[in-house]
Amino acid sequence: MTPHIRIFALAMLGALPASALAADPNLGRNLAATCANCHGTNGKSVGGMEALAGLPKDKIASAMKAFQRGEKPATIMHQLAKGYTDAQIDAIAGYLSAQK
Amino acid sequence: MTRFNRRDFLKASGAGLALAGAGGLAGCTKKGGHVVVIGGGFGGATAAKYIRMWSQGGVDVTLIERNPSFISCPISNLVIAGEKSLADITVSYEGLRRHGVRVMQGEVAGIDADKRQLRLASGDSVSYDRLLLSPGIDFLYDSVPGLTREVSESANIPHAWKAGAQTVALRRQLEAMPDGGVYALCIPKAPYRCPPGPYERACVVAHYLKKNKPKSKVLILDANEDVVSKKGLFTKVWETQYKGLIEYRKEHAITGLDIASKTVSFDFGDAVKADVLNIVPAQSAAAIARPFINKNNRWVGIDWLSMESEVAPYIHVIGDATFAAPAMPKSGHLANQHAKVAAAAIVNLLAGEPVNAEPLLTNTCYSFVDDKNVVHIASVHAYDAKEKTFKIVAGSGGLSSAPNELEGKFAHAWARNIWADMLA
Image (cartoon, rainbow over all chains, first blue to last red; front, top):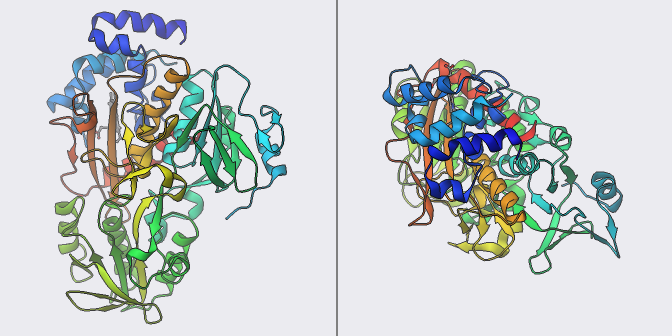
């Protein structure tokens, strides 16, 4: 684990259920990997889908919540976003925003 | 099938692998461990890359794959329809080598789970700390009375359900078919690889025929009780865009086949004589996984947290070969997702750490209904600790409301991104 991610993981302690973190400090990394099929490995899209790597954390999280509420136009993200809890979205957004 | 000899092995394995004794190749010397991945498809290639990435290069990974490069099943229906070439859906394994994966072209002859060693057809052996099997499916040719492996793997009555030479063979047959000919597509009982795939194939072939040979017919002969996936969306397209061209017949399990006249018959309903006959046989986990098949005589049961086989420790199995969790289709997208759960688990297990207790998976299948318009089905699956399986997160997922061009663009972007996620 890079020091950078470790600091992030510690910062996440407050936001996640203790059980999850105790089990795996790589929760954000693992959850963000569910987005990589479309948005690229670590959010680095190779084209045709928005890159998410390095976007501000708030932007990713608020877009996901807007998708959940049906307030952002979508073909598919409204359906996918509903599969994630607020804490999971927070972990994903934190991980992706830390990608260079 | 590519033969693989000892010289190739040494060439492929490079300096990192040390020779150990008579014919035995030691896995690795580093304390990070050595993972052998069998099968370089959506599951295996992704796992190989992610284990390297997530262990920061600490775990040695050897990928054994029989084909020289990856050929994608998703998008291969567009090759059959004449919209894409085989080159468009072929990706090199070079990208994996840049991640430090040892990619070896070869055939695995057997696995010794006790010794944690596998034997190659060449006679060499490779040892592992953990084995990841992403073997895909094999066909049960005798599920169709009269069908043989030779016929099904020939260009005569192809399945074209693994992308490659057969994809091209089916395309050639459709090109040669006269206007007014019959293309018959026989679908096996579920579960099979890529549930919406046959219906997509019928649509894009119909699109080609409508443009070029409008008097022709597409007959879908489905062994299932009804359309298995995206039913409302597909039937609407058949009744409008392809009215009079596509005909769907349910509950049509083949009971007889005459190879010379390309005629299939059924217990109920008329026999069908086709100009182009495309029989997709029933499927099981591929032969190399046979010792670990413990579900319905066809699939491998796994622990969904580690993806480890229920019957063989240190052997993880992912992708189409697994006995699916509820509402989990056999798709390339999911194999890629299985791979990441397995990669995270394997890296942790090799480091003596517990595996992620709350893994999540997504699935998406995009289907073309013609050259440009696409429909999707999507779902999010979360691990349920009580039932020890993945279940769809309530309220997540869904379908397109109608075929549309924007998702046609996203479908191609999905393919490019997932191929890169696996292989670049």
